[in-house]
Image (cartoon, rainbow, N blue to C red; front, side, top):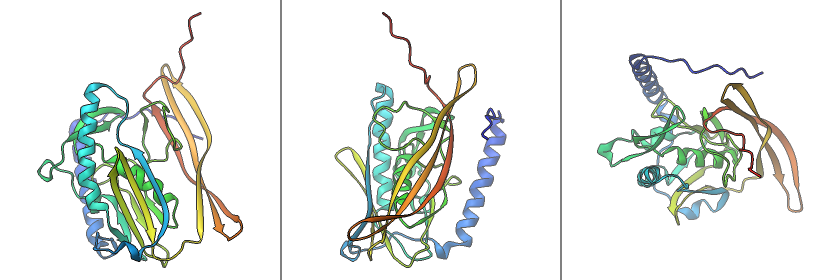
Length: 277
């Protein structure tokens, strides 16, 4: 049973020390298992003729004029990041690390102050907006035989479901470098990750060298909203995945498993105002 616990207020020094500790811990982890991490490599797309899954998402939302400027910077940052990810080959036993491939999104590398969510509020931060890419990749990986080793859910539900096409809570938040998205290839197949920007959309595709015998359906169950205090609402759901074996004439379901549970503090009022007569 979920129990809402208000976020603890910590001093700036405590937060800074925690960030340094977990950042160094991540660097040690990368160093220790460096030989297992996949790298971007030269590739011939014809060597990966089979599409496992493809998806795209809009780059812009209908927000205020000030936020639109941050969104433009977000798109600029994404153009830099996709170059680091596009063309990554995930071989058997390889680990895919989102942040190890992209690196630290610093100003000196060309990143601008884009939109980043801090405690559920939009904020201008260097490298802001890269969660759009981790969200896209996570959704694609969920529709593949690859195994999710690390994923962090969003703690806040920031925007209403206007034009939402994916289930709530199906993304992956990222904070350099201690909140990472890590995927492992526990199959005998090789996979190619392609990401690009086209027609104001962020696009991604996962390709394989050999045919993948499974198809996947990711869906939401048990969605509800609870009131945890005056003006405090928390949104909940569970994400499940069905696995089907491909067949020439039909699909056979082989598995239906829980992927994750989501609990997010809502940053907007979920109750619609009464219409005046």
